[in-house]
Image (cartoon, rainbow, N blue to C red):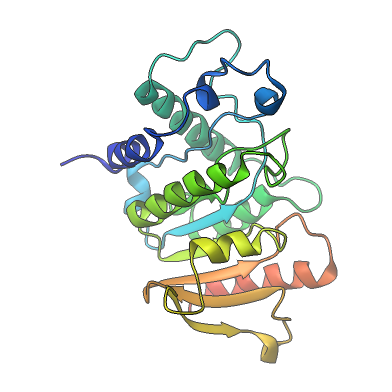
Length: 247
């Protein structure tokens, strides 16, 4: 039987086999439309994740450059690139989740708070978008529609194979329609149920929303963790406490 890490790598290979290779090998990075494209974000996992008492997947929209190929490294094959990307992201998560908290608010501070309450082994990290553009959101990139298609397939594979008990969508309001496109909550294609909020507890619906994905995975939607508004901070504190005391 394949390991969870190998199962992820196999799924990534199947999805990425149709991706233009120059998105990965940087052979066209001298052209303006590809010059600012990051490396590919592909989270891995560790065996300890699956034995954690509670598995929490946080879906963000982090926009680091993700230099999978560093310096003068050359693209060897899709399989090698996938292995390097998974190792890069997993190493980043492993190192940063145990570091002291950043000043102010940040995505990794949310991961650290979750790790404090649930342990580091059960925390997984995915992104709504699998590439960054100019170290920022790729939403204005001219090939964004293709990027969204690949990102959707990758995220769905991650949800399927990582088997989280809880998903926190922390990618912010500006990309909410993209998330809803991946996981519709209305109409015949809806995969969400038990929609609800915490308005009775004083948390506005636009700050915290909940639903079940595939009638199994408890999901929450919050603003991006870097939001410094008082209402966003209150919603994050409420969610952390809600998860700490249990559903």
